[in-house]
Length: 454
Image (cartoon, rainbow, N blue to C red):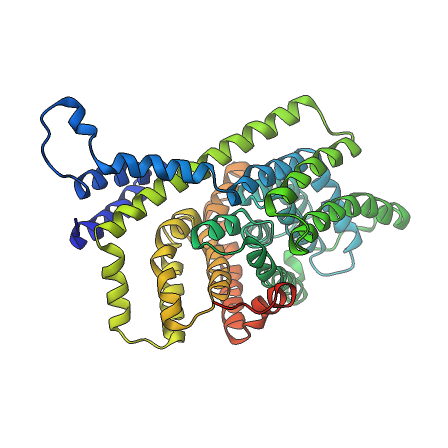
């Protein structure tokens, strides 16, 4: 039943319900089934069993089965488990304090150490909430005791923590690969340089800002600096094993030696081995990691089931056709199309999280890429960079809420918002830079796998 007005109403109602605080996955599922029952209704209900004689239930069943048998999504629980094990093995705190001492002569050494630690931990985790929470407990008190400006310190942690959705092995990129039916290997390769570029620009901003205004990040006191030999010994012991694990996991993926799921399994085993190496492997920590992995994986799976059901009904009612016709009727140039889409995603980042934007709204524009001659992997990297803003844009800014949740009365939410605004500008600058030089995203995957041919 084609009824585009109902489809648009369905989309608007979803946004309203999410803003009211309803659970995203089950809201998608309920609306998909509810509106789908209307869309596929054929009449003729005479008995109770006839109520369930509707194709929406068959669609729901098929979507659930498709999610559970998707090989790409198998990597999600394994990467999550690796991240949670590493988080609980006290590896990150060793790394942060070692980097802090190694960078002591640079302006804002603690902030730089926090950003580098976030970058490295992101490659071992891909979980924004975990990175921001852990660094909030670890780095913020250290910076506060060193008389760092609170707004400055909170901005560093929130911005660094969001790198987890961009730098491989990003959970977001696995989800994107499944939605857009793209190669996760190419997506990972395409994300390497944009992720490192963004992290590098964050560090450059910190150095320049502290150089201009040293009072926001005082240098460490001489009596707090341990002997040089101990600094480098601690850095070597904390940095090398984690880096080796990360390089093995990503190297096996990008080198074509293992699928993301196989590499994730190796990473999960490696996380356990690292925890044992640091004598932090306990039954309690393993149980916590398994529980958190199961919880996060269930959320992702139900998001997929709900979103695919919602999107199928939305398309069946004619919603995709209406939006595609509206966009094509404007006769945009390719650059205008890209700017318009990224602006829409940026605005959606104010009230919504990356999962809703990626699963509901991005698929609306994917079929138009061929029409405008846009490389899908380049578009994916623009979206991945843009989705950083969903964590940094008030009033939603989930990274700010993660940090506020662990710091409680130590800082006001408004102070965190003020601290993250400069990094929001850096993300936008990165997007402009990558648009001007697409090779930032496309050179590495083309080098590894050959030039992309649609």
